[in-house]
Image 1: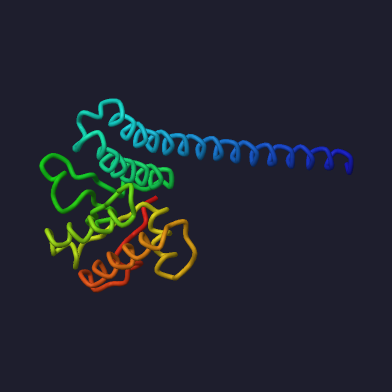
Image 2: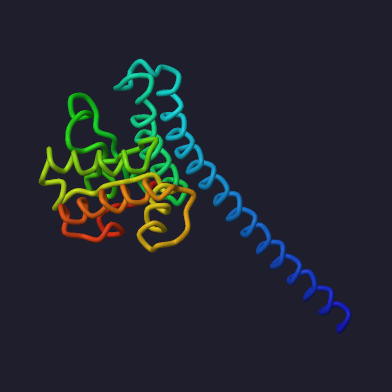
Length: 196
């Protein structure tokens, strides 16, 4: 009887282990399918940005300034893609139609943003100040977004750290940041958000 009960016990254990493996496999397949669906939604956002590149005539500005609007589009679409990969809804909305030239470029997590993707750091900061002069409510309630690499350079200049910029550019940055901080009532790091 010992031999038989050992065989029966082994068979029961084998069936139980097989059942556990089947459940694990089904669970893994389900998770992979869900992950694939999220990735597909995220890639649709990336394709949305790509569509603008195919026909840049729909973008505002001259050939020299279209990069700014495209940067806004990429900011919105890529942030949405990141959110969707994590299983969440879109978090950003690009302003469309006549609103594209207004005080707000896009809305991110319910916060209105104006972004400045200029070639020069002082030029971008100056553009923020001019924008806030034109739309003073943005100084209190709006968000400002600057390219992350330029944002980091501004912070380094403000902290007195070494940068690749000449002294004249650094002085211009300090002056424009001072005006920006005065208008918003916030330190640069609180008033401005780095892009992705």
